[in-house]
Length: 478
Ligand SMILES: Cc1cc2nc3c(=O)[nH]c(=O)nc-3n(C[C@H](O)[C@H](O)[C@H](O)COP(=O)(O)OP(=O)(O)OC[C@H]3O[C@@H](n4cnc5c(N)ncnc54)[C@H](O)[C@@H]3O)c2cc1C
Image 1 (cartoon, helix red, strand yellow):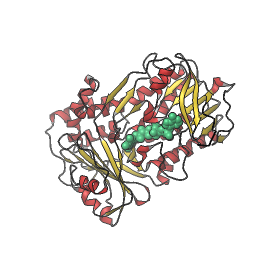
Image 2 (tube, rainbow, N blue to C red; image 1 turned 90 degrees about the horizontal axis):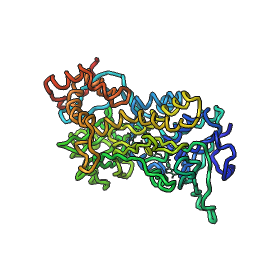
Image 3 (cartoon, rainbow, N blue to C red; image 1 turned 30 degrees about the vertical axis):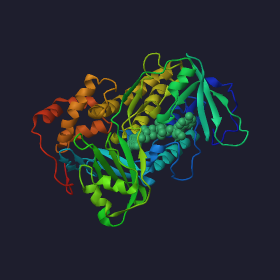
């Protein structure tokens, strides 16, 4: 077994293509795909466009990494099931663990949430490079202890698929080393190709080159934009004992989340839907922070030094490609992570869904006893099932903001939207409704729990009461 980070030993064609896999994208979903495949194939070649930088540094291939990233408890469980010890390693690397709702002060449309000492949902907050590096190290360490050989080809870009409409047989790649006379293109062959190339995946275009129709795509776009800046509190008043979350709501569609990350730093992400996009100019960014639903974050900023420029991000639509539908994937092809489904980031679900999806792939391979004809399609259906709860929650909550030309809302989605308004108000003050609400949004329980009789009764029939008028300092036992 060897884990190698260079490409000089990969031939243009593999003779033993029947037990080989290629993973396009060496980011989070790519590394988790590697983990899912360990022991089920002889070799895995990871094709990564970037060269990994040293240390916990941002890189070009993951532009969203500049923005606040939380890992929900559902994602943590999946991550630890795939790679035991990774969550502890993340906190060891400085990630901050916060119980919801105790350690995250949340302002809803009706007031501040009560700080129940519930301890069901630890939520991790860290800069994205820390997460990616820790996961990559654990994945490659697991590979080193397995029967599968993993080769990582850095600075190598996938530019197309090989095969035909029925079967994918490999990937066309080109080196991005930039050397003069660099051979333009070559082909890597494999029994299974996994697309984990993120939200910019070109799978639909690659399908066309194979003579296939692109999979059905659904988009629900709230038109949200992000802007993020890093801070270091300059005195204790700037570092409260909890993070702060003030998501927007229809009457005030501007929000902000101010959370601690590693090394005593804090990240402030401001957001707003169409017509309310946060600016990336530093002074205007600070001014915008005073216009979100509560002045608390702006007050905290008076006690903190900005230590980064402001970074923006606009492509935040919920977008799902239905590769799981009958006949939608050729044999030998599987799509994971953002390449399969992206979510409005304000719900913090994408990375957790990537982990839950990789776990679903591993379970499918375990059940099938390895890679057999039809296993990839079965795994793709398992990925869809793993993505469903987050999709239903995100598009249901986003419907009020989505533009008219988006796909028509299903009854389930409309119900979720109608219910969401009442739930957020009730969950803020009610420990029973709040616990179920958090179970669902942390991806540890299916959305159907929100329709359980006692949750419906409490949500719909108990009088609607406001939340707390100011950020709570008292932690309430439950
Ligand atoms: C602003 C923002 C904030 C977010 N916040 C959260 C959050 O709080 N919590 C959460 O869970 N999720 C969040 N997400 C979602 C999260 O970022 C993604 O779900 C996650 O990164 C998906 O992982 P991935 O590996 O599929 O894609 P990526 O992490 O984007 O990785 C894709 C990899 O593929 C490589 N690549 C791309 N194209 C090619 C190619 N042609 N050839 C070779 N390599 C290629 C890239 O270099 C990269 O390494 C957020 C997203 C955004 C946009």
